[in-house]
Amino acid sequence: MGPKRHTDNVKPLTEVELQLMSVIWELGECTVKDVQVGLSKERDLAYTSVATIMKILEQKGFLKSQKADKAHTYKVLVPKADYEALSLRHLATNLFDGNPTSMVSRLLDDSKLTKEDLVAIQRILKERLKS
Image 1: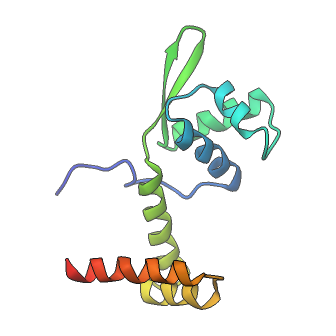
Image 2: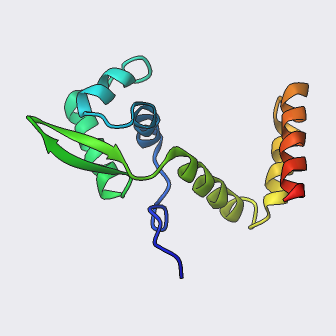
């Protein structure tokens, strides 16, 4: 059995948690104030609300905090790419009955994909089929 990954016990994020994590993934190491400033365009949350949500994210295993001067500094434990993969697996399992082909087919059918998008997807598929 391989080493335990940070995504082994990760649960899906709520909408507001995902908005905060999007800012945190962009910032990397950050403080509550950094995140609050980064959110201001999308969602106006009080400092205490941001701090509470970041503590929840830490309890969920997404972040790790350490005391630096008077503020806590937070570091990401679950990279965005890992969460994206986890979310897609969760979606495939729970909505598409474990059938990723059905999920991809729905995406291709219903999405407003440009010709450039389709060419890029085709290129990715060709590379995956080679390996």
